Length: 367
Image (cartoon, rainbow, N blue to C red; front, side, top):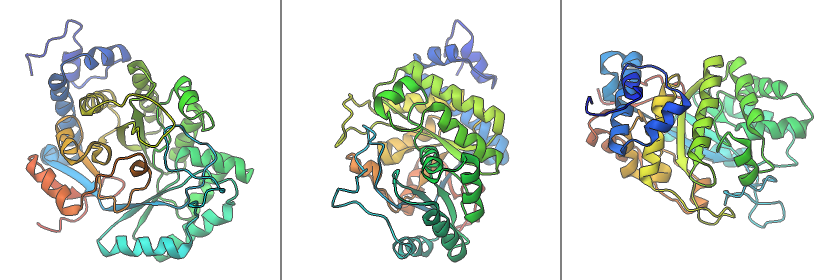
């Protein structure tokens, strides 16, 4: 550890557990990958020891949940998305309660504790569709957390329903929504957003949803999708926006980053590799000193890099993810089950534990 040199002293500040600046982050980004990973692993262990006590650095968590995309109809046409359809397309859909129930029945049968429910920006679904669905799921599956509806969806809802954003969020929470995923973050720099998703909510609108949600008692995750038209400075600005809001609200439970997936999409960019993914995750671990948990993105990087990421700042292996429809449309189709996740965690030298959305450890099934 002491062999890592830094004329500015940024490495010493990292090892002391201190907050780094955007300028520090750029310096760290330029370190050899293994050295940056070592620093991120050090900061990971500091964070987890504080959370779980002395054994914290030995634990890697994961969650048993399922993605449910309630509709693929969307009118924002993001250039990096291969999932969306218009109402004119023959394969567009809106799921019924019965179809969603079947998915939850399968999830509950394997001990699942959460659904991640997101869809497109459907221009014709009214508030009753969403409130009825949430109430139905909360009544029928009270043991399953509904982690649903990204910030762009909430901005869309406010426009379609003709309702203040806070009122929408409050009514969704009362109907059964338990937490909010960080989807639609991409890069929180409007110059970038205007190029890749010009019809989607801007940076301030994305942050506003999260601020209101946190104020109303709904936790959320935070995300970053990188490796397309943004610069490294843009990525660091994105992290800064997240850190600033977390200082204000303390509502983010975790951060997840992944790389742009290039197949079957309009956006043309040279994709970055696994080394760049590991570099950004390591940097995020160090920079986001107020977000305790970082998920490994095996869904886009594959199980092996997902495992390696546990030494580059990640303390969580994400989700079993029984179903995934969005990334797979862009050409990435990795699949692993609960047993494989536990094997990968154990082979990396950690103890595997299941968790809920709030990163509370669930009872160990194999004490």
